Length: 469
Image (cartoon, rainbow, N blue to C red; front, side, top):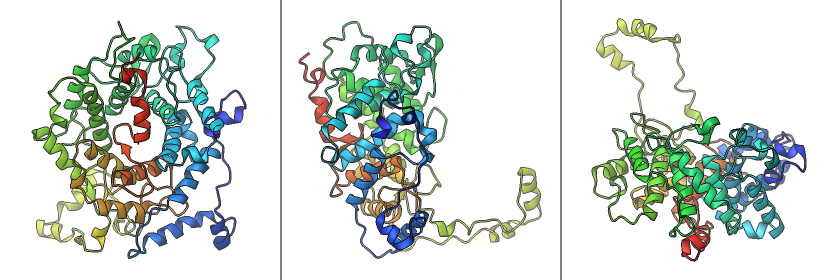
Protein backbone atom coordinates (compact mmCIF):
# COMPACT_ATOMS: atom_id res chain seq x y z
CA UNK A 1 0.00 0.00 0.00
CA UNK A 2 1.70 3.17 -1.19
CA UNK A 3 -0.21 5.22 1.34
CA UNK A 4 1.21 3.24 4.25
CA UNK A 5 4.79 2.51 3.22
CA UNK A 6 7.73 3.22 5.53
CA UNK A 7 9.10 6.69 4.61
CA UNK A 8 12.78 5.72 4.75
CA UNK A 9 12.47 3.17 1.94
CA UNK A 10 12.04 5.84 -0.73
CA UNK A 11 11.50 9.53 -0.45
CA UNK A 12 8.75 9.60 -3.05
CA UNK A 13 6.45 7.67 -0.74
CA UNK A 14 6.55 10.38 1.90
CA UNK A 15 4.19 12.51 -0.15
CA UNK A 16 1.33 12.12 -2.61
CA UNK A 17 2.10 12.33 -6.30
CA UNK A 18 0.23 13.60 -9.33
CA UNK A 19 -0.37 10.85 -11.87
CA UNK A 20 -2.71 10.47 -14.84
CA UNK A 21 -6.17 9.61 -13.63
CA UNK A 22 -7.44 6.05 -13.76
CA UNK A 23 -9.35 5.20 -16.93
CA UNK A 24 -11.79 2.27 -16.65
CA UNK A 25 -11.78 0.06 -19.73
CA UNK A 26 -15.48 0.48 -20.46
CA UNK A 27 -15.01 4.25 -20.57
CA UNK A 28 -11.96 3.88 -22.81
CA UNK A 29 -14.16 2.05 -25.31
CA UNK A 30 -16.91 4.64 -25.11
CA UNK A 31 -14.96 7.85 -24.77
CA UNK A 32 -11.34 7.32 -25.66
CA UNK A 33 -8.29 7.24 -23.41
CA UNK A 34 -8.12 11.02 -22.82
CA UNK A 35 -11.76 11.66 -21.91
CA UNK A 36 -12.10 10.22 -18.43
CA UNK A 37 -13.47 13.54 -17.14
CA UNK A 38 -16.57 12.81 -19.22
CA UNK A 39 -17.35 9.98 -16.81
CA UNK A 40 -18.88 12.59 -14.54
CA UNK A 41 -21.29 13.55 -17.33
CA UNK A 42 -22.35 9.92 -17.64
CA UNK A 43 -22.83 9.72 -13.88
CA UNK A 44 -25.06 12.78 -13.96
CA UNK A 45 -27.07 11.32 -16.81
CA UNK A 46 -27.55 8.05 -14.96
CA UNK A 47 -28.68 9.97 -11.87
CA UNK A 48 -31.52 11.40 -13.97
CA UNK A 49 -32.91 7.97 -14.82
CA UNK A 50 -35.41 8.39 -12.04
CA UNK A 51 -37.53 5.31 -12.61
CA UNK A 52 -34.70 2.79 -12.59
CA UNK A 53 -34.12 0.63 -9.52
CA UNK A 54 -31.34 1.89 -7.26
CA UNK A 55 -28.65 -0.78 -6.99
CA UNK A 56 -25.60 -0.98 -4.75
CA UNK A 57 -22.71 -1.64 -7.15
CA UNK A 58 -20.53 -3.58 -4.74
CA UNK A 59 -17.89 -4.76 -7.20
CA UNK A 60 -17.24 -1.20 -8.38
CA UNK A 61 -16.85 -0.03 -4.80
CA UNK A 62 -14.37 -2.83 -4.15
CA UNK A 63 -12.32 -1.75 -7.16
CA UNK A 64 -12.48 1.89 -6.04
CA UNK A 65 -11.10 1.17 -2.57
CA UNK A 66 -8.46 -1.20 -3.95
CA UNK A 67 -7.27 1.54 -6.32
CA UNK A 68 -6.99 3.88 -3.33
CA UNK A 69 -5.10 1.21 -1.40
CA UNK A 70 -2.64 0.01 -4.02
CA UNK A 71 -2.02 3.00 -6.30
CA UNK A 72 -1.15 6.64 -5.80
CA UNK A 73 -3.99 8.86 -4.66
CA UNK A 74 -4.99 11.79 -6.92
CA UNK A 75 -3.02 15.01 -6.45
CA UNK A 76 -6.01 16.68 -4.78
CA UNK A 77 -5.19 14.64 -1.66
CA UNK A 78 -1.76 16.30 -1.33
CA UNK A 79 -2.98 18.81 1.25
CA UNK A 80 -4.11 15.87 3.40
CA UNK A 81 -0.67 14.26 3.58
CA UNK A 82 -0.46 14.98 7.32
CA UNK A 83 -3.81 13.20 7.74
CA UNK A 84 -2.62 9.98 6.16
CA UNK A 85 -3.76 7.94 9.17
CA UNK A 86 -7.31 9.07 8.50
CA UNK A 87 -7.02 8.21 4.79
CA UNK A 88 -5.70 4.79 5.76
CA UNK A 89 -8.69 4.30 8.04
CA UNK A 90 -11.21 5.11 5.31
CA UNK A 91 -9.47 2.81 2.84
CA UNK A 92 -9.01 -0.26 5.04
CA UNK A 93 -12.30 0.16 6.89
CA UNK A 94 -14.06 0.45 3.52
CA UNK A 95 -12.68 -2.88 2.32
CA UNK A 96 -13.50 -4.44 5.70
CA UNK A 97 -17.09 -3.15 5.48
CA UNK A 98 -17.32 -4.74 2.03
CA UNK A 99 -16.00 -7.96 3.66
CA UNK A 100 -13.11 -8.31 1.19
CA UNK A 101 -10.10 -7.01 3.13
CA UNK A 102 -8.67 -10.46 3.77
CA UNK A 103 -9.53 -11.90 0.36
CA UNK A 104 -8.14 -8.94 -1.61
CA UNK A 105 -4.91 -8.49 0.36
CA UNK A 106 -2.21 -10.97 1.37
CA UNK A 107 -1.10 -11.65 4.97
CA UNK A 108 2.23 -10.04 4.09
CA UNK A 109 0.50 -6.87 2.88
CA UNK A 110 -1.65 -6.64 5.99
CA UNK A 111 1.40 -7.12 8.19
CA UNK A 112 3.11 -4.34 6.27
CA UNK A 113 0.19 -2.03 7.03
CA UNK A 114 0.43 -2.95 10.71
CA UNK A 115 4.14 -2.13 10.76
CA UNK A 116 3.41 1.27 9.19
CA UNK A 117 0.90 2.03 11.95
CA UNK A 118 3.41 1.12 14.66
CA UNK A 119 6.03 3.23 12.91
CA UNK A 120 3.71 6.18 13.63
CA UNK A 121 3.59 5.42 17.37
CA UNK A 122 5.20 8.10 19.54
CA UNK A 123 7.54 6.81 22.31
CA UNK A 124 5.77 8.85 24.99
CA UNK A 125 2.34 7.48 24.02
CA UNK A 126 -0.16 8.04 21.22
CA UNK A 127 0.24 8.08 17.44
CA UNK A 128 1.24 10.75 14.95
CA UNK A 129 -0.89 11.38 11.86
CA UNK A 130 1.87 10.55 9.35
CA UNK A 131 5.61 9.79 9.37
CA UNK A 132 6.62 13.22 8.09
CA UNK A 133 7.33 14.67 11.55
CA UNK A 134 9.38 11.67 12.74
CA UNK A 135 13.02 12.70 13.10
CA UNK A 136 14.10 9.43 14.77
CA UNK A 137 13.90 8.11 18.33
CA UNK A 138 17.62 8.57 18.78
CA UNK A 139 17.27 12.33 18.19
CA UNK A 140 14.13 12.76 20.26
CA UNK A 141 14.49 14.64 23.57
CA UNK A 142 12.16 16.11 26.14
CA UNK A 143 12.92 19.54 24.69
CA UNK A 144 12.11 18.76 21.04
CA UNK A 145 9.33 16.16 21.31
CA UNK A 146 6.69 18.87 20.87
CA UNK A 147 7.73 19.06 17.21
CA UNK A 148 6.78 15.42 16.68
CA UNK A 149 3.65 15.11 18.83
CA UNK A 150 1.04 12.43 19.18
CA UNK A 151 -2.29 13.48 17.73
CA UNK A 152 -5.61 12.71 19.47
CA UNK A 153 -7.68 11.84 16.35
CA UNK A 154 -4.81 9.89 14.76
CA UNK A 155 -4.36 7.85 17.95
CA UNK A 156 -8.01 6.78 17.85
CA UNK A 157 -7.87 5.88 14.15
CA UNK A 158 -4.55 4.05 14.53
CA UNK A 159 -6.01 1.80 17.24
CA UNK A 160 -9.13 1.04 15.21
CA UNK A 161 -7.06 0.27 12.09
CA UNK A 162 -4.91 -2.17 14.05
CA UNK A 163 -8.05 -3.96 15.22
CA UNK A 164 -9.43 -4.02 11.67
CA UNK A 165 -6.19 -5.68 10.55
CA UNK A 166 -6.45 -8.30 13.31
CA UNK A 167 -3.61 -7.00 15.50
CA UNK A 168 -3.74 -7.76 19.24
CA UNK A 169 -2.43 -4.31 20.26
CA UNK A 170 0.38 -5.99 22.22
CA UNK A 171 2.87 -3.42 20.92
CA UNK A 172 0.69 -0.42 21.74
CA UNK A 173 2.17 1.69 24.54
CA UNK A 174 -1.07 1.43 26.47
CA UNK A 175 0.11 2.82 29.81
CA UNK A 176 2.02 5.68 28.18
CA UNK A 177 -0.98 6.56 26.03
CA UNK A 178 -3.35 6.59 29.01
CA UNK A 179 -0.90 8.84 30.90
CA UNK A 180 -0.75 11.20 27.91
CA UNK A 181 -4.52 11.38 27.37
CA UNK A 182 -5.46 13.41 30.51
CA UNK A 183 -2.81 15.96 29.55
CA UNK A 184 -4.85 16.66 26.42
CA UNK A 185 -7.89 17.76 28.44
CA UNK A 186 -8.42 21.47 29.04
CA UNK A 187 -9.80 22.98 32.29
CA UNK A 188 -13.26 23.38 30.71
CA UNK A 189 -13.41 19.63 30.05
CA UNK A 190 -12.77 19.77 26.29
CA UNK A 191 -9.84 18.11 24.52
CA UNK A 192 -7.14 19.59 22.32
CA UNK A 193 -5.31 17.97 19.42
CA UNK A 194 -1.61 17.92 20.38
CA UNK A 195 0.77 18.89 23.19
CA UNK A 196 2.93 21.83 22.20
CA UNK A 197 6.03 23.29 23.83
CA UNK A 198 5.77 23.41 27.62
CA UNK A 199 3.01 20.76 27.51
CA UNK A 200 0.52 23.37 26.38
CA UNK A 201 -2.61 21.90 24.84
CA UNK A 202 -2.86 23.11 21.26
CA UNK A 203 -5.16 22.62 18.31
CA UNK A 204 -8.94 22.72 18.20
CA UNK A 205 -11.12 22.38 21.25
CA UNK A 206 -14.42 21.33 19.74
CA UNK A 207 -16.46 18.15 20.08
CA UNK A 208 -14.43 16.22 17.52
CA UNK A 209 -11.49 15.97 19.89
CA UNK A 210 -13.82 15.15 22.79
CA UNK A 211 -15.12 12.18 20.81
CA UNK A 212 -11.67 10.89 19.89
CA UNK A 213 -10.38 11.41 23.43
CA UNK A 214 -13.31 9.48 24.91
CA UNK A 215 -12.94 6.84 22.19
CA UNK A 216 -9.24 6.30 22.88
CA UNK A 217 -10.00 5.94 26.59
CA UNK A 218 -12.71 3.41 25.74
CA UNK A 219 -10.39 1.33 23.55
CA UNK A 220 -7.48 1.22 26.00
CA UNK A 221 -9.12 1.18 29.43
CA UNK A 222 -11.73 -1.45 28.74
CA UNK A 223 -13.52 -3.23 31.57
CA UNK A 224 -10.41 -3.97 33.63
CA UNK A 225 -8.19 -1.55 35.54
CA UNK A 226 -5.51 -4.21 35.96
CA UNK A 227 -2.06 -2.79 35.30
CA UNK A 228 -3.32 0.80 35.51
CA UNK A 229 -2.59 1.51 39.18
CA UNK A 230 -1.60 5.13 39.60
CA UNK A 231 -2.69 6.05 36.05
CA UNK A 232 -4.78 9.20 36.24
CA UNK A 233 -8.06 9.05 34.34
CA UNK A 234 -9.55 11.92 32.36
CA UNK A 235 -12.06 14.14 34.17
CA UNK A 236 -15.24 12.46 32.95
CA UNK A 237 -17.55 14.85 34.80
CA UNK A 238 -15.93 17.92 33.23
CA UNK A 239 -16.09 16.34 29.79
CA UNK A 240 -19.81 15.63 30.17
CA UNK A 241 -20.41 19.21 31.35
CA UNK A 242 -18.64 20.60 28.30
CA UNK A 243 -20.63 18.38 25.94
CA UNK A 244 -23.92 19.38 27.53
CA UNK A 245 -22.99 23.06 27.24
CA UNK A 246 -22.71 22.65 23.46
CA UNK A 247 -26.41 21.91 22.89
CA UNK A 248 -27.91 24.72 20.83
CA UNK A 249 -31.34 26.30 21.28
CA UNK A 250 -32.83 24.14 18.51
CA UNK A 251 -31.67 20.83 20.01
CA UNK A 252 -28.60 20.03 17.89
CA UNK A 253 -25.02 20.07 19.12
CA UNK A 254 -22.54 22.81 18.18
CA UNK A 255 -18.75 22.93 18.14
CA UNK A 256 -18.86 24.91 21.37
CA UNK A 257 -21.29 26.81 23.61
CA UNK A 258 -23.51 29.39 21.85
CA UNK A 259 -22.55 28.21 18.35
CA UNK A 260 -24.67 26.87 15.47
CA UNK A 261 -25.81 23.25 15.64
CA UNK A 262 -24.07 20.93 13.20
CA UNK A 263 -24.63 17.24 12.45
CA UNK A 264 -20.94 16.36 12.53
CA UNK A 265 -20.48 17.84 15.98
CA UNK A 266 -23.74 16.24 17.08
CA UNK A 267 -22.38 12.83 16.11
CA UNK A 268 -19.16 13.54 18.01
CA UNK A 269 -21.08 14.62 21.13
CA UNK A 270 -23.25 11.51 21.21
CA UNK A 271 -20.29 9.32 20.25
CA UNK A 272 -18.30 10.63 23.21
CA UNK A 273 -21.23 10.12 25.59
CA UNK A 274 -21.75 6.62 24.18
CA UNK A 275 -18.11 5.68 24.86
CA UNK A 276 -18.37 7.07 28.40
CA UNK A 277 -21.72 5.37 29.02
CA UNK A 278 -20.45 1.97 27.88
CA UNK A 279 -17.75 2.06 30.56
CA UNK A 280 -19.86 3.69 33.26
CA UNK A 281 -21.04 1.72 36.29
CA UNK A 282 -23.56 4.41 37.25
CA UNK A 283 -27.24 3.63 36.63
CA UNK A 284 -27.88 7.34 35.99
CA UNK A 285 -27.48 8.31 32.35
CA UNK A 286 -26.73 11.71 30.87
CA UNK A 287 -30.01 13.45 29.85
CA UNK A 288 -28.86 13.88 26.24
CA UNK A 289 -28.86 10.10 25.76
CA UNK A 290 -31.82 9.42 28.09
CA UNK A 291 -35.10 8.93 26.26
CA UNK A 292 -37.85 11.17 27.59
CA UNK A 293 -35.66 14.04 28.76
CA UNK A 294 -36.19 17.47 27.19
CA UNK A 295 -32.59 17.55 25.95
CA UNK A 296 -32.93 14.15 24.31
CA UNK A 297 -36.28 14.79 22.65
CA UNK A 298 -35.21 18.16 21.20
CA UNK A 299 -32.02 16.53 19.91
CA UNK A 300 -33.96 13.76 18.18
CA UNK A 301 -36.37 16.26 16.61
CA UNK A 302 -33.44 18.27 15.27
CA UNK A 303 -31.75 15.16 13.82
CA UNK A 304 -34.90 13.89 12.10
CA UNK A 305 -35.46 17.38 10.67
CA UNK A 306 -32.13 17.16 8.87
CA UNK A 307 -33.62 14.85 6.23
CA UNK A 308 -34.32 16.87 3.13
CA UNK A 309 -35.34 16.61 -0.51
CA UNK A 310 -33.26 19.69 -1.35
CA UNK A 311 -30.40 17.93 -3.12
CA UNK A 312 -28.60 20.80 -4.82
CA UNK A 313 -29.05 19.34 -8.31
CA UNK A 314 -26.79 21.13 -10.76
CA UNK A 315 -29.53 22.22 -13.09
CA UNK A 316 -30.88 24.45 -10.31
CA UNK A 317 -27.58 26.19 -9.62
CA UNK A 318 -27.87 28.78 -12.41
CA UNK A 319 -31.50 29.65 -11.75
CA UNK A 320 -30.70 31.64 -8.62
CA UNK A 321 -28.13 33.96 -10.25
CA UNK A 322 -28.74 37.69 -9.82
CA UNK A 323 -30.20 39.39 -12.87
CA UNK A 324 -29.73 42.92 -11.57
CA UNK A 325 -26.77 44.87 -10.31
CA UNK A 326 -24.68 43.08 -7.69
CA UNK A 327 -25.12 44.43 -4.15
CA UNK A 328 -21.81 44.75 -2.35
CA UNK A 329 -22.77 45.71 1.21
CA UNK A 330 -25.58 46.34 3.65
CA UNK A 331 -25.82 50.05 2.78
CA UNK A 332 -26.41 49.21 -0.89
CA UNK A 333 -29.08 46.70 0.11
CA UNK A 334 -30.84 49.30 2.28
CA UNK A 335 -30.89 51.81 -0.57
CA UNK A 336 -32.11 49.17 -3.04
CA UNK A 337 -35.22 48.33 -1.01
CA UNK A 338 -35.89 51.77 0.49
CA UNK A 339 -38.29 52.76 -2.28
CA UNK A 340 -40.29 49.54 -2.28
CA UNK A 341 -43.59 49.14 -0.51
CA UNK A 342 -44.30 45.97 1.44
CA UNK A 343 -46.54 44.63 -1.34
CA UNK A 344 -43.86 45.32 -3.96
CA UNK A 345 -41.23 43.62 -1.80
CA UNK A 346 -43.37 40.53 -1.44
CA UNK A 347 -44.16 40.41 -5.14
CA UNK A 348 -40.46 40.32 -5.96
CA UNK A 349 -39.85 37.20 -3.89
CA UNK A 350 -39.08 34.12 -6.05
CA UNK A 351 -41.81 31.58 -6.54
CA UNK A 352 -40.85 28.35 -4.78
CA UNK A 353 -42.52 25.15 -5.91
CA UNK A 354 -43.54 22.69 -3.25
CA UNK A 355 -42.30 19.09 -3.23
CA UNK A 356 -43.87 16.65 -5.67
CA UNK A 357 -44.30 12.90 -5.49
CA UNK A 358 -41.33 12.57 -7.83
CA UNK A 359 -38.93 14.77 -5.84
CA UNK A 360 -39.89 13.10 -2.56
CA UNK A 361 -38.35 9.84 -3.80
CA UNK A 362 -34.86 11.06 -2.83
CA UNK A 363 -34.38 12.25 0.72
CA UNK A 364 -30.82 12.76 1.87
CA UNK A 365 -29.61 14.68 4.92
CA UNK A 366 -28.06 18.06 5.50
CA UNK A 367 -25.78 19.11 8.34
CA UNK A 368 -27.34 22.46 9.21
CA UNK A 369 -30.64 24.23 8.68
CA UNK A 370 -31.31 25.47 5.12
CA UNK A 371 -28.49 23.48 3.52
CA UNK A 372 -28.51 20.98 0.67
CA UNK A 373 -28.15 17.25 1.22
CA UNK A 374 -24.63 15.80 1.36
CA UNK A 375 -23.53 12.15 1.40
CA UNK A 376 -21.50 12.44 4.60
CA UNK A 377 -24.50 13.85 6.49
CA UNK A 378 -26.41 10.69 5.72
CA UNK A 379 -23.77 9.12 7.97
CA UNK A 380 -23.52 11.79 10.67
CA UNK A 381 -27.29 11.85 11.19
CA UNK A 382 -28.19 8.18 10.83
CA UNK A 383 -25.23 7.07 12.96
CA UNK A 384 -26.26 9.44 15.73
CA UNK A 385 -29.86 8.28 15.55
CA UNK A 386 -28.66 4.67 15.63
CA UNK A 387 -26.67 5.33 18.81
CA UNK A 388 -29.81 6.86 20.32
CA UNK A 389 -31.99 3.94 19.19
CA UNK A 390 -34.11 6.22 16.98
CA UNK A 391 -33.02 5.26 13.47
CA UNK A 392 -36.51 3.95 12.48
CA UNK A 393 -37.78 7.55 12.59
CA UNK A 394 -36.13 8.47 9.26
CA UNK A 395 -37.19 7.71 5.69
CA UNK A 396 -34.74 4.88 5.04
CA UNK A 397 -35.99 4.25 1.51
CA UNK A 398 -35.54 7.92 0.57
CA UNK A 399 -32.02 7.98 2.00
CA UNK A 400 -31.13 4.81 0.10
CA UNK A 401 -32.43 6.23 -3.17
CA UNK A 402 -30.52 9.45 -2.62
CA UNK A 403 -27.24 7.66 -1.96
CA UNK A 404 -27.53 5.04 -4.69
CA UNK A 405 -29.32 7.13 -7.29
CA UNK A 406 -27.70 10.52 -6.80
CA UNK A 407 -24.20 10.32 -5.27
CA UNK A 408 -23.03 6.75 -5.97
CA UNK A 409 -20.46 7.15 -8.76
CA UNK A 410 -20.13 5.23 -12.01
CA UNK A 411 -16.55 4.15 -11.26
CA UNK A 412 -17.27 3.22 -7.63
CA UNK A 413 -17.31 5.25 -4.46
CA UNK A 414 -19.60 8.12 -3.53
CA UNK A 415 -19.33 11.83 -4.19
CA UNK A 416 -20.18 14.66 -1.84
CA UNK A 417 -23.26 15.66 -3.81
CA UNK A 418 -25.13 15.11 -7.05
CA UNK A 419 -22.77 14.62 -9.98
CA UNK A 420 -19.57 15.05 -7.95
CA UNK A 421 -16.56 12.68 -8.21
CA UNK A 422 -15.93 10.16 -5.44
CA UNK A 423 -13.56 10.66 -2.52
CA UNK A 424 -12.55 8.43 0.38
CA UNK A 425 -14.50 10.18 3.13
CA UNK A 426 -17.83 10.33 1.32
CA UNK A 427 -17.35 6.85 -0.15
CA UNK A 428 -16.89 5.26 3.25
CA UNK A 429 -19.59 7.28 5.02
CA UNK A 430 -22.08 6.63 2.24
CA UNK A 431 -21.60 2.88 2.63
CA UNK A 432 -21.82 3.06 6.42
CA UNK A 433 -25.16 4.84 6.27
CA UNK A 434 -26.43 2.11 3.95
CA UNK A 435 -25.06 -0.55 6.30
CA UNK A 436 -27.17 0.87 9.16
CA UNK A 437 -30.19 0.20 6.95
CA UNK A 438 -29.15 -3.40 6.25
CA UNK A 439 -27.90 -2.97 2.68
CA UNK A 440 -27.06 -6.35 1.16
CA UNK A 441 -23.34 -6.81 0.60
CA UNK A 442 -22.26 -4.75 3.61
CA UNK A 443 -21.36 -6.01 7.08
CA UNK A 444 -23.01 -4.77 10.25
CA UNK A 445 -21.29 -1.81 11.85
CA UNK A 446 -20.92 -0.20 15.26
CA UNK A 447 -22.02 3.47 14.98
CA UNK A 448 -19.67 4.80 17.68
CA UNK A 449 -16.48 3.05 16.58
CA UNK A 450 -17.51 3.36 12.92
CA UNK A 451 -16.14 -0.15 12.36
CA UNK A 452 -17.63 -3.57 11.68
CA UNK A 453 -18.91 -5.84 14.43
CA UNK A 454 -16.04 -8.17 13.51
CA UNK A 455 -13.64 -5.44 14.61
CA UNK A 456 -15.63 -4.86 17.81
CA UNK A 457 -15.35 -8.55 18.71
CA UNK A 458 -11.58 -8.33 18.32
CA UNK A 459 -11.60 -5.41 20.74
CA UNK A 460 -13.63 -7.30 23.32
CA UNK A 461 -11.23 -10.25 23.10
CA UNK A 462 -8.31 -8.13 24.36
CA UNK A 463 -6.98 -8.89 27.87
CA UNK A 464 -8.15 -5.60 29.42
CA UNK A 465 -11.65 -6.28 28.17
CA UNK A 466 -11.62 -9.88 29.35
CA UNK A 467 -10.14 -9.05 32.75
CA UNK A 468 -7.32 -11.56 32.21
CA UNK A 469 -4.34 -9.22 32.57
